[in-house]
Image (cartoon, rainbow, N blue to C red):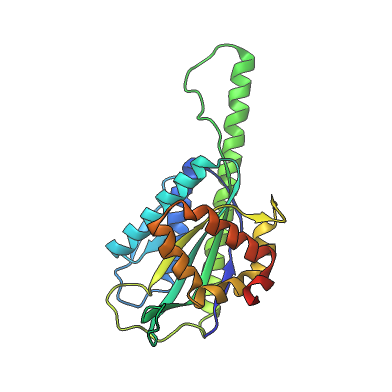
Length: 258
């Protein structure tokens, strides 16, 4: 089965904008991969003049909000950096049991990478000042924030159009409808620790790293990442080591074949 990989346009966001932006993106992706058993619900964003559609499924909303909260916690620990979060669709297959594997494994058929460049700006001072220089500085900062918000709104619209375009054009890889209850194909959301390339966070790191994403996806399909996720859940301290291994695979994909 082919695994499609979609890299969405990088967005420049402030920390307080992350939750709304990611909700809008993830729910739009899931809605365009809905199974048909949905009750569409329109949502108006509070920060932007944009309306998107949710599937109206409580479990989907809970799962997305839970991961967004984890992502925001990660961003707060590493502010003013580039971050990446991925929504992946998969199907569950039964396989012959062996000594070291389970009978069930995940086969990933689609990855959506969301790239955010996160800044942190202090909240504007609500107090008033009669000093002309302070007033001018406040007005300048307000104009800058308005320009940034307008630019982000425009970019977010572009991302939504990307999702619609990719979702409508790429369908041959989608598996047959599974015999499960719910509004969506099974999916998971994973958080990348950093967007590194050659040891540094670079502006085009997500695009360059995507060249090896299919190879890494092969490792995922092979079950190695499923095992690592289980191991991390049992011992959180192992997470740092796992991130180092993932980074090594991006830098040296040939390690997959050793």
